[in-house]
Image (cartoon, rainbow, N blue to C red; front, side, top):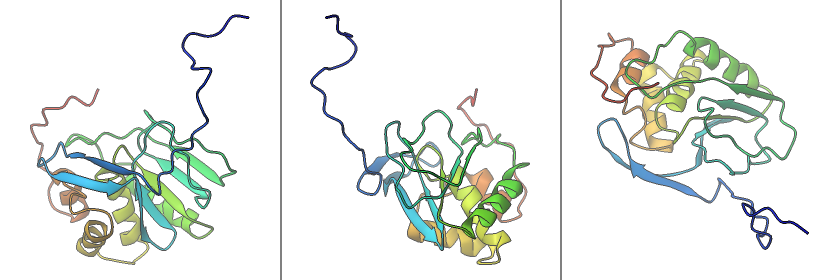
Length: 181
Protein backbone atom coordinates (compact mmCIF):
# COMPACT_ATOMS: atom_id res chain seq x y z
CA UNK A 1 0.00 0.00 0.00
CA UNK A 2 1.54 3.30 -1.14
CA UNK A 3 1.41 6.30 1.14
CA UNK A 4 1.68 9.97 0.31
CA UNK A 5 5.06 11.18 1.64
CA UNK A 6 3.69 14.72 2.04
CA UNK A 7 1.03 13.59 4.56
CA UNK A 8 1.78 12.45 8.10
CA UNK A 9 -0.27 9.24 8.51
CA UNK A 10 -0.14 9.70 12.31
CA UNK A 11 -1.34 13.32 12.30
CA UNK A 12 -4.31 14.10 14.49
CA UNK A 13 -7.18 16.35 13.42
CA UNK A 14 -6.71 19.75 15.07
CA UNK A 15 -9.17 22.64 15.08
CA UNK A 16 -7.34 25.95 15.38
CA UNK A 17 -9.60 28.23 17.43
CA UNK A 18 -9.36 31.96 16.59
CA UNK A 19 -11.12 32.80 19.87
CA UNK A 20 -8.08 31.54 21.82
CA UNK A 21 -5.14 32.44 19.60
CA UNK A 22 -3.26 35.71 19.28
CA UNK A 23 -1.41 37.42 16.47
CA UNK A 24 1.85 39.02 17.62
CA UNK A 25 4.23 41.18 15.63
CA UNK A 26 5.30 44.64 14.49
CA UNK A 27 3.21 46.71 12.07
CA UNK A 28 4.58 47.72 8.67
CA UNK A 29 3.24 51.25 9.22
CA UNK A 30 4.79 53.15 12.16
CA UNK A 31 6.49 49.92 13.36
CA UNK A 32 4.11 49.48 16.31
CA UNK A 33 4.19 46.28 18.36
CA UNK A 34 0.89 44.40 18.59
CA UNK A 35 -0.48 41.39 20.44
CA UNK A 36 -4.13 40.91 19.48
CA UNK A 37 -6.68 38.11 19.56
CA UNK A 38 -7.27 36.70 16.10
CA UNK A 39 -10.76 38.24 16.20
CA UNK A 40 -12.36 40.90 18.41
CA UNK A 41 -15.93 42.05 18.95
CA UNK A 42 -16.19 45.72 17.97
CA UNK A 43 -19.90 46.47 18.09
CA UNK A 44 -23.30 44.77 17.77
CA UNK A 45 -22.86 41.96 15.23
CA UNK A 46 -19.53 43.47 14.13
CA UNK A 47 -16.36 41.45 14.55
CA UNK A 48 -12.97 42.20 13.11
CA UNK A 49 -9.71 40.36 12.91
CA UNK A 50 -7.02 38.56 11.04
CA UNK A 51 -6.69 35.16 9.47
CA UNK A 52 -4.30 32.28 9.19
CA UNK A 53 -4.79 29.31 6.92
CA UNK A 54 -6.41 26.50 8.88
CA UNK A 55 -8.20 28.58 11.50
CA UNK A 56 -11.77 27.40 11.94
CA UNK A 57 -14.38 30.12 11.48
CA UNK A 58 -16.32 30.39 14.76
CA UNK A 59 -19.82 28.92 14.51
CA UNK A 60 -21.52 32.16 15.54
CA UNK A 61 -20.26 34.04 12.45
CA UNK A 62 -23.07 34.28 9.87
CA UNK A 63 -21.38 36.60 7.35
CA UNK A 64 -17.72 36.68 6.31
CA UNK A 65 -16.04 39.61 4.56
CA UNK A 66 -12.47 38.75 3.62
CA UNK A 67 -10.14 41.55 2.56
CA UNK A 68 -7.20 39.12 2.46
CA UNK A 69 -7.87 36.33 -0.04
CA UNK A 70 -4.36 34.92 0.34
CA UNK A 71 -5.45 33.01 3.48
CA UNK A 72 -8.92 31.71 4.29
CA UNK A 73 -10.83 30.39 7.25
CA UNK A 74 -11.89 26.75 7.35
CA UNK A 75 -15.68 27.14 7.27
CA UNK A 76 -17.37 24.13 8.86
CA UNK A 77 -20.88 25.53 9.21
CA UNK A 78 -23.38 27.18 6.92
CA UNK A 79 -22.84 30.92 6.57
CA UNK A 80 -25.40 33.26 5.08
CA UNK A 81 -22.87 35.15 2.96
CA UNK A 82 -19.20 35.27 2.01
CA UNK A 83 -17.45 38.11 0.22
CA UNK A 84 -13.82 38.08 -0.88
CA UNK A 85 -12.14 41.35 -1.90
CA UNK A 86 -8.45 41.87 -2.59
CA UNK A 87 -7.19 44.90 -0.67
CA UNK A 88 -3.67 45.96 0.13
CA UNK A 89 -2.38 47.53 3.34
CA UNK A 90 -0.70 50.21 1.28
CA UNK A 91 -0.82 53.99 1.08
CA UNK A 92 -1.63 53.44 -2.59
CA UNK A 93 -4.77 51.36 -1.91
CA UNK A 94 -7.83 53.03 -3.42
CA UNK A 95 -10.96 53.75 -1.44
CA UNK A 96 -13.56 53.35 -4.21
CA UNK A 97 -15.09 50.15 -2.82
CA UNK A 98 -15.01 51.03 0.91
CA UNK A 99 -18.48 52.58 1.13
CA UNK A 100 -20.08 49.68 -0.74
CA UNK A 101 -18.32 47.15 1.50
CA UNK A 102 -19.29 49.03 4.66
CA UNK A 103 -22.91 49.31 3.50
CA UNK A 104 -22.96 45.55 2.80
CA UNK A 105 -21.54 44.88 6.28
CA UNK A 106 -24.36 46.94 7.80
CA UNK A 107 -27.01 45.05 5.81
CA UNK A 108 -25.53 41.75 7.02
CA UNK A 109 -25.34 42.96 10.64
CA UNK A 110 -29.14 43.12 10.65
CA UNK A 111 -29.32 39.30 10.40
CA UNK A 112 -26.31 38.15 12.40
CA UNK A 113 -22.66 38.52 13.33
CA UNK A 114 -20.29 39.69 10.59
CA UNK A 115 -16.55 39.03 10.64
CA UNK A 116 -14.43 41.40 8.55
CA UNK A 117 -10.90 40.11 8.28
CA UNK A 118 -7.62 41.01 6.65
CA UNK A 119 -4.17 39.63 7.45
CA UNK A 120 -3.91 40.81 11.08
CA UNK A 121 -7.04 42.88 11.61
CA UNK A 122 -5.42 46.28 12.03
CA UNK A 123 -5.76 48.34 8.85
CA UNK A 124 -7.90 46.98 6.00
CA UNK A 125 -10.56 45.49 8.25
CA UNK A 126 -10.40 48.58 10.50
CA UNK A 127 -11.04 50.79 7.48
CA UNK A 128 -14.23 48.90 6.56
CA UNK A 129 -15.40 48.38 10.17
CA UNK A 130 -14.94 52.06 11.03
CA UNK A 131 -16.74 53.15 7.88
CA UNK A 132 -19.60 50.74 8.68
CA UNK A 133 -19.95 52.36 12.11
CA UNK A 134 -19.97 55.82 10.51
CA UNK A 135 -22.55 54.86 7.86
CA UNK A 136 -24.81 53.32 10.52
CA UNK A 137 -24.45 56.50 12.58
CA UNK A 138 -23.03 54.59 15.56
CA UNK A 139 -20.05 56.94 15.63
CA UNK A 140 -18.44 59.80 13.82
CA UNK A 141 -15.10 58.99 12.13
CA UNK A 142 -12.93 59.96 15.12
CA UNK A 143 -15.25 58.06 17.45
CA UNK A 144 -15.16 54.94 15.27
CA UNK A 145 -11.35 55.04 15.23
CA UNK A 146 -11.32 55.41 19.03
CA UNK A 147 -13.64 52.40 19.42
CA UNK A 148 -11.40 50.25 17.21
CA UNK A 149 -8.27 51.25 19.10
CA UNK A 150 -9.95 50.51 22.43
CA UNK A 151 -11.64 47.21 21.50
CA UNK A 152 -9.10 45.79 19.03
CA UNK A 153 -5.68 47.45 19.34
CA UNK A 154 -4.04 50.86 19.63
CA UNK A 155 -2.28 49.88 16.38
CA UNK A 156 -5.56 49.94 14.42
CA UNK A 157 -5.38 52.30 11.44
CA UNK A 158 -1.64 52.84 11.77
CA UNK A 159 -1.82 53.16 7.96
CA UNK A 160 -2.01 56.97 7.94
CA UNK A 161 -3.67 57.08 4.50
CA UNK A 162 -6.56 54.94 5.77
CA UNK A 163 -7.01 57.07 8.90
CA UNK A 164 -6.84 60.32 6.89
CA UNK A 165 -9.48 59.08 4.44
CA UNK A 166 -11.83 58.12 7.27
CA UNK A 167 -11.38 61.54 8.87
CA UNK A 168 -12.07 63.28 5.56
CA UNK A 169 -8.54 64.65 5.40
CA UNK A 170 -6.45 64.81 2.23
CA UNK A 171 -4.70 61.54 1.53
CA UNK A 172 -1.12 62.32 0.66
CA UNK A 173 0.66 60.04 -1.78
CA UNK A 174 3.22 58.29 0.36
CA UNK A 175 6.47 56.64 -0.41
CA UNK A 176 5.30 53.19 0.51
CA UNK A 177 8.36 50.99 0.29
CA UNK A 178 6.26 47.83 0.00
CA UNK A 179 5.17 46.96 -3.50
CA UNK A 180 1.56 45.72 -3.25
CA UNK A 181 1.88 43.54 -6.32
